[in-house]
Amino acid sequence: MTQPSISNGQLGSSVRTLLNNTIKRWFNVLDYGAVGDGTTDDYAAVAAALADIYTNKGGTLVFPYKTAGYKLGTAVSVDVGQFSGNGGITIELNGNKIAPSHAGWCFDVATNFFGANNSGNTKPVIINGGGAMIQTSNSAASGGVRFSDCVRFVARDLNFVGYNAGDGLQLFISTTNQSTWCEFGLLSNINFYACLNGLYCKTNTAVAASSFLGCQYEMLTGNGTVNNAKLFNLEGAHTNSVFISCGGFYNQSGATGNNGFYLNGKFQGCTFTSPWIDSAGTQSVATDIVFGANYTASASQFPTLVNTTWISLPAAWQSKLYVIGPYLTIGTAGSGTVMTGQAREVLAADRTYYVNSSTGSNSNNGLTSGSAFLTIAKAMSVIGTLDFNGFGITVSCSGSFSEQVTIPVTTGQTSAAKLVLDGGGTATITSATSSGGTIECPKGTQFTIQNITTTNTGATAARGISVRGGRVVIGSGLTLGAVANGCQLFANAGGFIDCSGQTITVTGNATQFAIASFGGYISFFCTLAFGTRTYTTTFQASDAGQIEVNGTFTGTVTGSRYSATMGGIIETYTGNTSYLPGSTAGSTATGGQYG
Image (cartoon, rainbow, N blue to C red; front, side, top):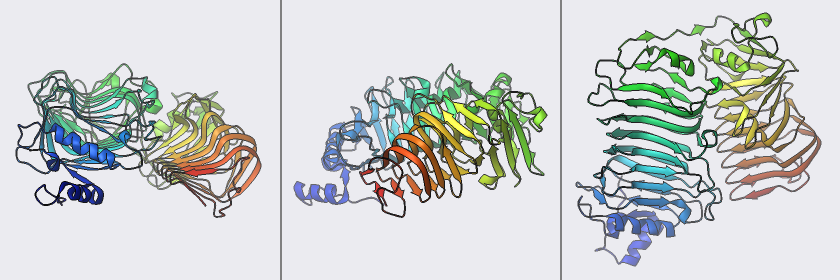
């Protein structure tokens, strides 16, 4: 429903401003002098409306529908760092044609995440297109929309046309604002026509340090006669991101050298569900998947392709992906040769896979202790190809492992108890992973861990067990070793760590013991045996993360007991601020709660 505005002829400007800006928080560009005839430059009106949004500490910028649309002669810069508080900015384009005539970006969205007005706040920016078409008339234009260094952003129901030397949509990590991430974005129902890059995830820093974490891309499609175009040009580190029904170049002719998915970064826990490019048929103009020089070489970080449709993939690249589904074309683009994907093995009974760091080999089948795998990652890659059919799988580990383990998305697994990682009481897993866990449990995964020790020597943001959208049940005999620069337990993006009824032994120090953020949840109805430990903060909850603690503590802990910020909750059911282990008082700020 269209929000009514107050026109100049009905009320004085001061009353109109009060009603539109203070009560409704809607800022109509027509009230600021925009014409919407497709020829008059409406930039000044848009900039004036944005200035009032900044003064108002957030609001909605509205482009009422005009048949001829709006011309913009200058890039519209949108920056939630221009105001304090937690308010965000929404842009409602209402199906209009937006016609930028300049050489820059149509909308350039930036967030000075660590700036004075933000201090780590994640104020959202949302662009609702309503079917809007952003069509440039400048052949040198940079692109349609750019999100720079943003956390929590949305763009949906948009069409980008004519950026044949630029990008329809760009996610950019600049590093100029102390930030190395562009995270938790939702891009949905967007079409790119005649763009050099449809979606370009671009970074100015090292791949591993450039985080495009937790983004979801739905129904992004592309077409158009531009040579050497890339529908998805993906640099940086993509973790727990999902591409759903994305593709393009279907049955297209008249262009050469196009790429569907150009993977030029690191992909961990990422899934491409029902991707489709045009590789079948004689008019093919695109290679579906191309691997750039920065593509990860780690098997535990390959993306997963599910229910692929007409994906052309040279045989030499098969080992670089996990492919699940019936249509995988092996060969060159346009060959039209279809190969039915290998059917999943369906379990008829519980199964154990054995892994031995001394005597194993990844050429073995892992089904007996004498034919054990060498790495846990190999076992997990095999498990990801199976149909559990309601049965259970145990991964029995012996030895000391130096690797990062990522739990796979599975088929037919009915609970976390049906996939068990068991160290037999002696196995240890150590990694040197920064911005990640020794064990990663991404969205859509679940497992139980028991009788094993985890440590992480990574330089920054290291974690022992990292649960980003998945679910982990802590079984008996878990030991948490040192994490030099991070936390031992980490739940994020709706991830859940269930520690009920067990004893967790802690044998090493960390910056934090447990962190729950962005909807992550950790439940400690258990015994925590700390020994003698030192933390900066023992329990930390932020950004709607929640930690429940109601158990028994042994040992001595030095450091702050807790920190709850940005809507984070720490619930002890006591209200006693001295209840949690630590030597100094905890703290709450910016909506954090302790009880």
